[in-house]
Length: 149
Length: 121
Image (cartoon, rainbow over all chains, first blue to last red; front, side, top):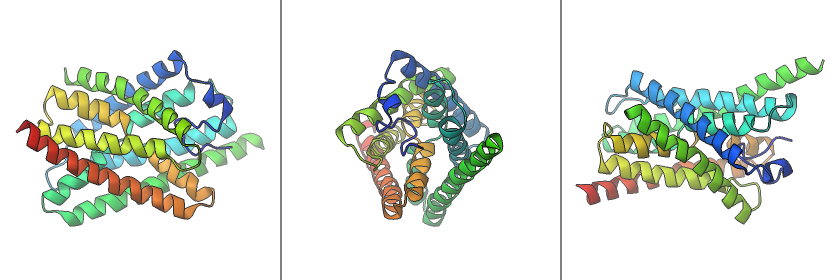
């Protein structure tokens, strides 16, 4: 059964019991790696004022593709180490993707006099992110089917 | 030096999301992702404060904004939860969750920038 909240879902008994220093350390270490990757992409691909924030768009959509695949693989396909989901899902992908930058960028585009770009960025990110999660889950379910047969 | 600030902020921000999510789920059982909603709104507000209060080239921004807020908030978890709500046959809850996250995140970011500009300039 896939969780609703991929970070931690207290409906799942094993996740209710996983609160240890090792879990927090895995989340923290993963978060550092994800954030540094995000910083690197943003640094290499800066967004001009009033322009479409391609770097954040790319980061959030690729992060969504990966979390969709990851959650199906660690829940339904492979028996993995108990720290893998906190490290990769909560840490790396959570640190890599960002909702706060998305919000502030939409605000900045509106204030910079580009409300059309703001609305486009808002909607295209959401649509591409949801499609990416779905694509990641579908690809992983296909792998699960191959493994099972 | 900037890399170190980003890393330090993220080292705190990622476990802060995990712990906040757990705490809110314990208070509020059910299938609506209140934990992620909370961190995304709070993180958008704090990044707004940093954006209004300082330049994006400062160490404070790298630590608090890029590092801490970036790791505290998450688009991957938000996207995954929205798709799971759709898969579970709760399309209205999915639409409500996405709309509330974006509207409240944007409002919090705008309020944060306004306060940041007012307090530090």
